[in-house]
Length: 257
Image (tube, rainbow, N blue to C red; front, side, top):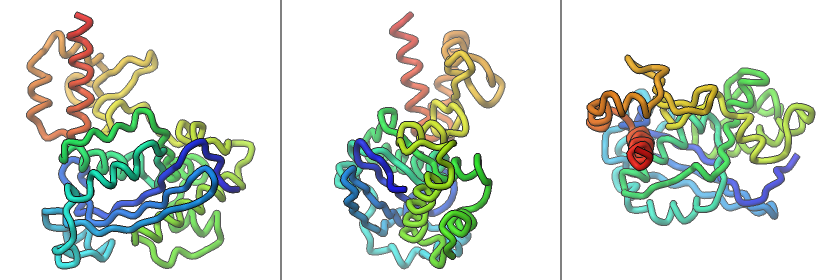
C-alpha cells in the first residue's frame, strides 16, 4: 500500500561516530524524499564529523576516519540540507529516539533551529515493536519476505524502512491508517517534551522532570522554587535540544509571572 501524503515526507537514516545524541556526530546521511504525487528524490552524503569515529561504530557501519577525512563538515551542508527538509514530515527506523534528535543537535550546533513541533514524525521501529517486536532485518524478512543484504548501510536501511512501512499498512488495515498524522501518533512510545525524555508530559499534559531528585515534579514549580537548577542544567552535560526546551519553559513561566 503506497503512502497517502498531504505534503512530502523524508525517510532518513544516519551513520554516526557513536550513540550519544549530545556528543556524537553524523558521518553519513541518506534520505528518500517522497512527494504526494509519488515522485521520489534520494541522496547519500558522507560527512566529516570533526571528531574520531569510535571503533565500535566503524565496525558496524564500515566507515572509518580516513573515509570521511576529505568530506565536507556538517556546517558546510547545513543550509542546503535544511532547505531540503523544510516543510517535510519525517520518518525512519528508531528515528524518534536517535536520528531526529541527533540531526536536530547538528543543526543547533550550526545555529539553525530545526523545529519539528509542526512536523509529523513516524518511527517505523515503534510501530513494529508495538505490533511484532523485532529488529529491522527481521522486520524486512517478516513484512517483505526479503533478506536485508546491505544492513547498516544508510541507503539499504532507509529503503528497507520505506518498504516495511508500506507493508505494515497492508498487513494491519484494522490497526493502522494510511495517514501520516495517525502514524506519527501511533509510533510514539512516550510523551517526551525534549527528545532525550528528560522532560515529559504527565497525564494532565503538564511538563514534568523525568530524572533525578525532581523526577515527577512540574518543571515550572521546580524553576520557581529552585532557580539555580536551571543554571545547573544549562551548564551540564545535556543535549542542546533539552536546554532549548528548558529555556522555552523557563521564559514562558517568567512571562506569565
